[in-house]
Image (tube, rainbow, N blue to C red; front, side):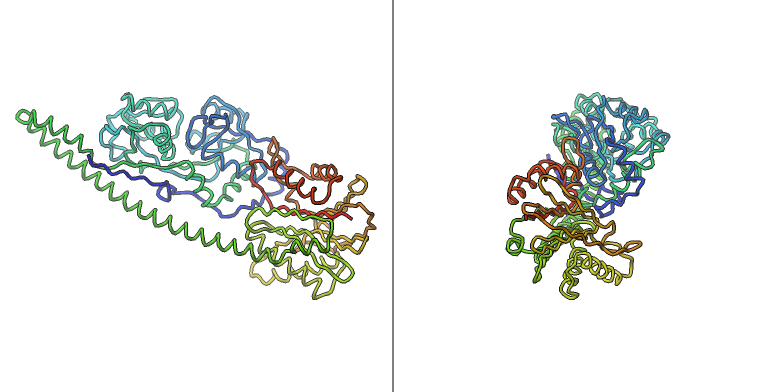
Length: 575
């Protein structure tokens, strides 16, 4: 027996209609933010046994291709999406109708569902395939299923499509795909139809060794969306923006974690010889039947050869595209790593910090390789200037803005010889706006910042959105910043400089919002400013070096397994 075994990873051939936007920041409207704030938990329904799209794993947790997508939506939008326990897919649909849950995270559009659901754009698309036994009849396309018994799960979109478009097909209804596959093994059915990933999962991981993917169903594309109950427009808009923020690379990595496809094409010579032996015994009696059979067999062979040639061409193209993607990805990663080296060069070294801020620490945790947050310090004859800045965005865009803003601070001090914190911010704002006005398109990016000037036991402070905290004798004193960024803004006002007479033992903290905005804990919520204040008050008896370790450990404990959502920068100083 000669059989061509072709193993390949799911790639461009079956991702026909994925619509992607390569951004990660989500620009939510005021209404959308208020909706998230007013809805602590948003429940979603699921199919507990629809592997690998979604299912309940052995630990009782929601899992599958859609779970990482949901996790990204949680971290980027702030919605606390949680599964609502159910008895099955039909139960989830019923719960959406009765408003017990708000989202179905992976679903295809049908005419019936359009009556009471609204859908996001399709965020992933696969082909349907026909599955049959290795010993079964040859199936070249969907029309070959006529006169065969087809096992199909109730309530699935493919079942509705077949019922509508092929009413003469003989359908054996099942509760799920796994039951349909067993009916093929027990010969109660001849074939079934399923989406390519779910077919791949069961055939490669569930022990259905004697089944094969016969062919692709070219008549249908399996477009998957998220859905909400009609009228829930704000939630639908938030989900749409979140899905659009997920890049091609992120989606492909998620899919590759679950899907490996095995196609088996070729001529089964064992079957041919068995048939030939039977024909030889009855050749004298039924020679006409033998001639008819041979002609039919030639057509089947031609079909299989044609299908194999098309598949080999597709595999070659997929491999070529894969090499291109890998090469470009490596080039981008190398460039970002080099950018990190450049960005690190503009930050004050630990040696300089230790020299001028004796009893202090800097907690700096970029979200990505490069960061939008940065810390800054300049020593003048009579004072030490230091700051924590949070530029728009993070990653590469944030890092590029940070270079412009860092340069603006340096020029304000060196070129214009300014030392008053408020005046430094005024001049830095002018420089940043002037630099971005050189662009042909309007740029409204900039930074939030807290800047301090330390003159022996006197402290001066000014801020753009970011406050100053001083802890004295167990009491936290907060000084709020001007509510305007360093960048373009309506009704620009001068930044106010605040002065303080410090006492021995005072501790000073300036920071970006990345620490308090991190999602985590048991309920996956934000850490928030109140918890940040309370934790700083609880560690005041410790040295600044110990405080650094405790702050870092608290952040990682709260974050747990959730993704870090923003850059983190905190400076602490004890007088």
